Image (cartoon, rainbow, N blue to C red):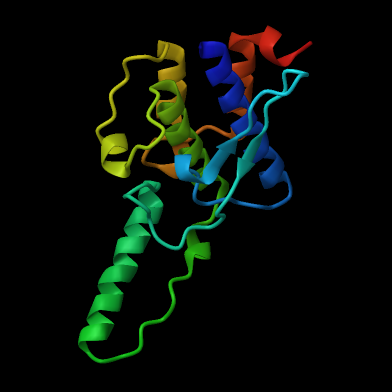
Length: 171
């Protein structure tokens, strides 16, 4: 049901917006780190994020800027290990920026829209759009742009969703 999918995506974006307003970047948005509650008697559904801040890409799921940095770290760690030197801990905070969560929202939009909850990064990389409306696909793809500076803001994502189905969000 598309209304349910839109409510989920809207709830995700509102939660990200609220976190960003408090200076919190999740950094690892993916299906494994999102819990959707069931509908209450009042028709409310909430989203909960778990496992904040990445410590390495799980199943190749991660924004391009994060993946590049992670693999650079791994190559450096491998070289240090070969030399018998101590490997410093990976500092995931270097890439924590709102754009990282926008990429995660786009990836979650694909997973929700195309009904791929247990997907991995390879399937995301070679994603197909078969079940989603064109406007939804275009919005999600804009979040998944390689260049973080070209991704939309969370506010603009919310506005686009709200204008498509205002009755779902404004009563």
